[in-house]
Length: 582
Ligand SMILES: Nc1nc2c(ncn2[C@@H]2O[C@H](COP(=O)(O)OP(=O)(O)OP(=O)(O)O)[C@@H](O)[C@H]2O)c(=O)[nH]1
Picture 1 (cartoon, rainbow, N blue to C red):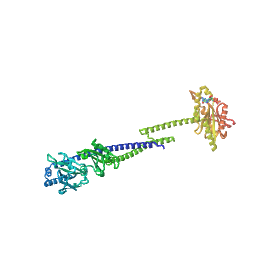
Picture 2: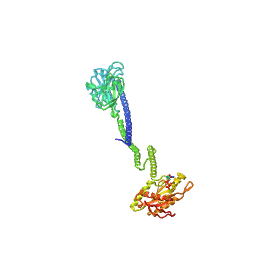
Picture 3: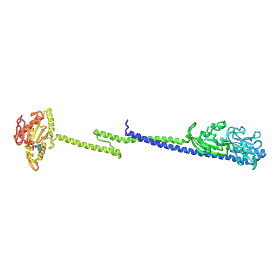
Picture 4: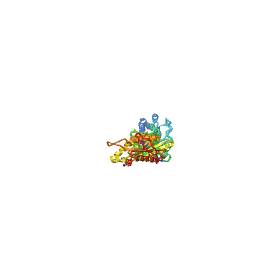
């Protein structure tokens, strides 16, 4: 299938327009995605670092609270003297501390003696601090938070391994992820009198710390070995508590350098696997806690499609824009194609019309572009072709005229004369008319040539031809048969008398002196007359008879008019001759 210029142009422009719009849209969308991804990485990393810093600050805050409690005189007095008043006062204080710190589950003072008997204990029951006293107080000397904390130097603290709380007797928090911090209580010198211990609800702590983070952020926490402590999928947290292992580095391989201490942060694009693709940032936070591998790894993740929501929206908007632009490009291409091909088609139609003989019209001659130039060239071509055709026709006319006329005198030649004679005879036969034919031969014309030259002879022939033509009417035909022989066909002569009058008029005109080169040459002529139907039926017959009549007159030697087989009335000069028939 052959495609026209308009179709091809339209297709090319449409492809170019749509391609350009599509590529622009694609690169704009791609750049937007990359920028938004970078921005999401940076936001996640910053949020994770802020969160890690908050954990450090929170642990420091817990430690300060414990230090304050440990250094209170009432705490030391209680451990030294075990007075109920001191216990009551501390219990009130602990209740206030629990109120002020929603993540604290339990606050205790535990004595170093008496197997680590709890001296003051306030638990959180629901959201209300509740004191535990009397026989409900337990001996805790065998727990690490007592045994390990008592030998600590002043200012040092004990931080438990973050784990699920199985200490059912601990009042509240069994089954919850738990963090315990303990600080020894001592006089300025000497062994510790006891410890102050706080149980911190890890989930509650992180809920507080992450409260102002975007809702779609998901939190990860792992200890220094990579054991997952907090995970969006709660079933993966504290797997070691169930005798299994769920390690953060198994899920995010890029976290391994953070656990080994080679790096402090990592940003990860986690492809879609069991869950949608994620963007995540992890930060390693060193803590003074061998039980936790001296390090916590904290992470935040966001579902990639949520993080790149703006780019996705922008992608759809760009798709609409690209679609619209492509449509405009397509329409533009169509319009341009039509605008270009319409004048071309019009010119082609004009050219076809010109080939069929019509004038070219509707050419865009005024356009200043290439189409205008093409139209003007066509127009000039048309003018040139017309001019050449005109010249050709003129030449054809000239040739046609030459083929039917005598070149010297301009009179009809033998061929045209014979045609007219045939026509006149046909008419005459149909209507019963007569046709008269006069055969004229100049007398002694050769002498003119011989004496005055051939050109003088030519001039004589021209002048006499004009005279002959001037003497007859329009429907008569004067012709030169050749040399000094002329014939005249009388179109409407009804009888011999009229023909004779015309013949003598011609004879007299011929006899008038002809001015040539300052001379006046006198020429005589002999005229033979024949007529249809009496002297012949055919043109050649009539011509031959007129010729014979002319010769008969010429034979008499003094010019004149002769009719075949008839005696005609004389002319004005009384010059009358008869010519015998046959
Ligand atoms: N100048 C000129 N002479 C011509 C032309 N055609 C023929 N002639 C001359 O016309 C002359 C005709 O001679 P002829 O046939 O003997 O006729 P004539 O001299 O008139 O003698 P008669 O007819 O017997 O009276 C010749 O000398 C031709 O050369 C022509 O076109 N121009």
